[in-house]
Length: 155
Image (cartoon, rainbow, N blue to C red; front, side, top):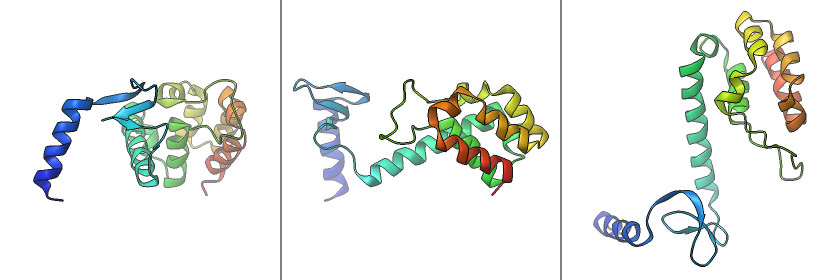
């Protein structure tokens, strides 16, 4: 396919279908997003899922750098990954349904005042214990245990 043809059909489809950045129900009742992507029947590909994940990780890192650069920049890669994972905080699995959403986002992560203070001070033991003592830890279960151990040991 030529680039010209690709650009032509994209423009036509955006004009006809519209561009919606949040899921909606189309006229046939199907969950849809983007330019008419039928999520109910087509879903997304593994490649698309990883593109979305990488975008989410990059957005979280930008937020961490904007909000707590003095803490985030001083961390090793392992502990940075812990904060990134907490910032995104995707539910552990579909087999462990949650009573409440566990999406922390940057706002939720910034509410870990004591834990962040312990991280800034390099007190990994107390930082890990603070993570485990949270409502978030109860929601995500084993994930919190794993992340707290990474925070504690740095490996």
